Image (cartoon, rainbow, N blue to C red; front, side):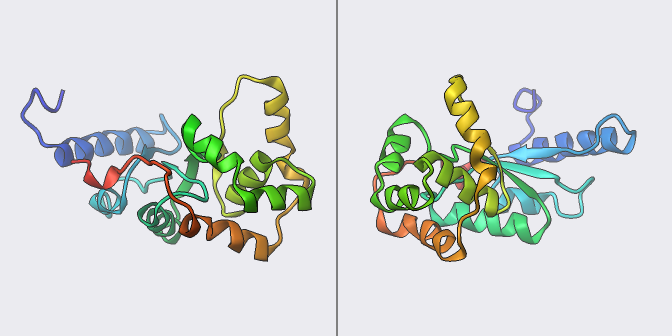
Length: 177
């Protein structure tokens, strides 16, 4: 609708956010969040309407630095993160992640699957995770990530994985209008 009305994307986002903020003020909704917002988009909403409760972004050990910076910005501004693609990304990226040698060693160390190690890493980083599966076995495995905790040195090792791999693809929301 905004395009048909001749409004730019920033104006459309702001008007939408103000409408959501009004619903929050009326008690119709408890909180409102955004999806795939980079730091530049989040800054547009500083001191505009209700605080942003959540930013849903791709988040896994292989994301590029700009996504890590968005994560840090959200953390600093008390914006919760919901991580989609927490297992590495689309099918091709997920397959690369599942074959990562370091994650494989950690999987053996904790007697957990690589998926469980990756989900646990994101949870310990403070994310809500939405791994998505229709497979009941995988659903149960995903729920079992609360039965262990990664050591701090292993958290750091996983966080550094992105510096030693290549070939992962990610959506670049920095260039969105």
